[in-house]
Image (cartoon, rainbow over all chains, first blue to last red; front, side, top):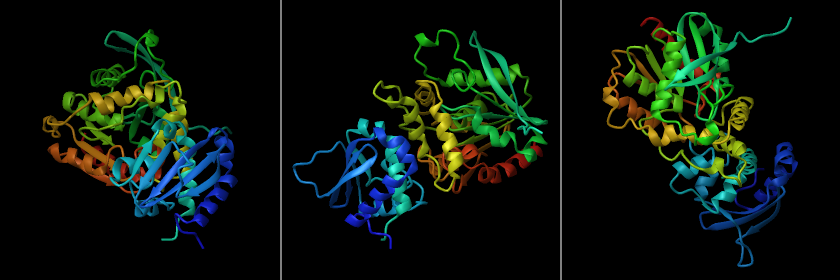
Length: 132
Length: 281
């Protein structure tokens, strides 16, 4: 059964999908950054190292720092996390521009610099989907 | 037997505002000219499926050219000393120079994104020479598409331009077609995508002048894909509503690059318009 976002088992499944992906093996080597996903009241930190998710830290404490935050309501994420989302929920930049409750925050230079790899990572997340 | 596309590629010399430009174009078919304009930062390869569509080329002479700085059209000499920023004036003059140099008679001009915007300007200024216009993914004013990301030295501008525009496509569009759009974007010259969005998102503004377009002189069709987050169908519909006689269509399951990301779907919307125009020379 598909795990539910943003449970730990969902991130385990995503980490496996990213590690197994042929495209990430080609483009991910230069993708190293720390990224926080905010879904409503929950924050989950992803540490990406050379195109792999090396650590998932739910509710990160003061020992952690990160450069980019993707903030949305849980429903925004659940709408996004499907292979064929409705218009404007299909892409992070689309949501940032057209979904008022969703935003790309922090050091956007880092986000844009890694846009190719992050687009792939989140496409894999959409294929994974989520149990509502 | 080798397999060929029915497309012929040639170079033409266009004089635009006293500057000589060597411009590449592709052509297929016979009949009334259907001139196709590519999107910002891309080139005429986006139209290759339409150029190979026999149902269209048996009645239409389809032409698509690379704007100067794009594809196989080299930038004019001295480009290294000038910031590339496309203006409404320069874009209008370039398209009209192509129409006049090739002696295209009352062509139907079909453009996408910045090409969709300029066809409205052509309809406003040159309705006597342009027979009809079909604008894709265009509205009176497009906000927020001009940025410096692709020209910063700490970015790979080609990859950023390609990835920045990739998400404008519908998830239903075939992956190989979407990846081809990404690839052609990655081949754009440095600063060219940015310079084109200067026209699309900064310089051009039709607001308040829509009603000056005379659709009795030349029909105006506007179509936008429902997944286009740069120019939403609602924004295009508002522009169409402000142009007396303009027709608007919302395209389902398509994003910002209809002719390239999902040609089979796009042609379902295009064919009835061309049929209508065939009866309205």
